[in-house]
Length: 464
Ligand SMILES: [Zn+2]
Image (cartoon, rainbow, N blue to C red; front, side, top):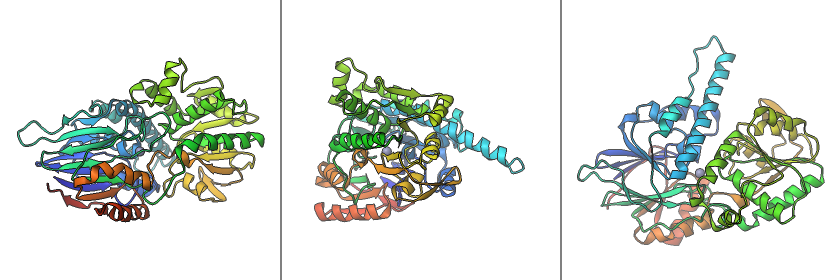
């Protein structure tokens, strides 16, 4: 086997690794680069290989930085199968269409603004996204599946395990009969609401592992509900609004479940709660369709006849006019809206309307990549640009790091333990350089195994 790192190498976004086995080329993930607009745009536009040269894709999970360039791969000639879990397929159906919709809208806006320039083409269209979804092939967890061509000697077998990161997320083991390679995808954490804990992988020869929080320690997941209670309570006591930027997939549903639990326990004042994101509404529907991915806690709700993702004070908003009405709403309320890093979407309107008032709170609920508006708020900037206009930050900015969907350094080291008995080398991806370097040192120190932060374009021969 031969491996080339073509994304999420030296950074977090754009996850994509090319694997050659018996002369055939496969991709592990095909994600979008995010961050500085111009640079991301340049990186996203072109693949360093023809789309038609790829035999098949194995997708770890639905997040756009792992799946977002699949429609572009289709556009560039790829027609092979995309193997992933049934829940990931349904999530991608909603998310790739949503991304195409945003890309088409952005291109239309630019073309309208600059009518005399050559027209800008969206990265991909709704049609490309719909055609891509047709290529998905469901593979259940722990079901060995041959994804190579069936020519003798050209077999490549994959087996996926629950990564405990988002609904349907997987870590994958691939073998050509000589070498066993593990790909972590994004590794979750024990105790996250709704989904199951990460499953152990079998021993392997090589490991490609994420390192998002390779040098950090998170607060315990079990404290999330208390932190959320405190933030909601003090914001309401000031008569303020709580604005919660949240990823439409996973984080929104977890927040809804925690708020539901707080309501059931009479720990929250009676304020209205809104989920303002058409994507989150669609994705919550996908969650309801995949109870096979739930943990015991959610199953108990279901057995008790309760809807874990709905309750009396909660309103889901799809319609844009209903969303705008929130701007003029008086009195305290909670609104959960996308995107989670405050880069796009309805959250920007809510921030613009609320960020200048010290009674309000902005509650960040997940990873904030470099150069995003969410990162600036987290870093304590006193003035930020929203829609190009400078806004004073008067609102409280709080964080709910307890819900991080990524394992911290200790959890990553623990997760990789069952893989280590015959492990020769670890390639660290999906982390800013300082995080990857810290994890490399920790792996060397604890297991005595060489760990290398992957560089963009780095190529490695994997021998048995
Ligand atoms: Zn992810």
